[in-house]
Image (cartoon, rainbow, N blue to C red; front, side, top):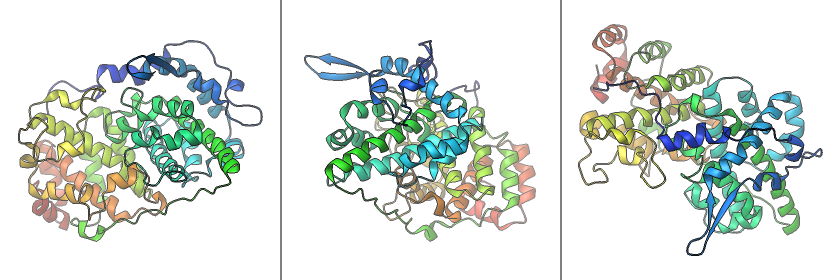
Length: 431
């Protein structure tokens, strides 16, 4: 069913240009000494001066995201080259103190390692984890002044409370990178599975690392001035996870099957294949949160492709423009499409598969894995193997379903003696 010309990108032309081209148009070097002082303080003025603002009599002020990304490009490049020049010891000595304000300071040495690894999926994963950690930390800062933290990250970044702590010009910088579909929108294009690993410039990950450290410096000054104490909210415990256990634990046999068949399954876009390989590596390394984060984004990417095919709306495969709705899990799993038509995906996948996804992602009494992970609400170091295993088993179901008859027959033989085969038949009508 999923056939046609090879898909080379899931980014619409304007979004592709914004992320992959605009930040490379301005040539010339930016002196890192103008970005960070000898004392290690971030020179915010150098950064905020790159953010362009339009003033309209009728509408007030508006960010010029395109111009801002162009001007910020050389700054990001200088920051990236600086980080690449540091040893891990130098990085930890100079920058780790400024990450203590987040709820997960252990994350940042990992991100530094990813920058030097030359593994593009590691850059994407780092940005996904960094933005979720940053959202949680900024929510804690919001609660120094406000009472109820906004659920949506873009609303949090637009709040008067954060502007009061960090300054509006600093918040505008964050909006360019992660707070608006008109800007780079790095958080959403990654968490919703639109961007392939090759489409995320590593320099933007380096820049987000520096911005997070700079926010820590500004926050320290604010706390000293106001004599208040930042309190971190406790991590959330995933609820009713035991009710989700419908597959046996993933074994090395199942991992081998998935590793082989994902190369040929049409459920997985070739441009996204590095994410799947990286997810398997993370599972075998017992990095279960990392595995789950990667799988969630790629399940959304794969299901969006099926959604677009069965509902005959191929344009919904691409990232939306700022004026158009994204096709995300919410619509993919809904009974009706936005235009009122019946969504054909639930009928195509079958009730057991839809029930599993609904319980995993949306049910208010369930673990709501995507929400919890993307908003930084769970402890990544204590993330349960069972959740990753269930998601990996379900992913294997979908990947097998879109494999060719030859591959499917071969893997049926391999799995025929295992309880996993029976579970697949019962739950998702695949084998």
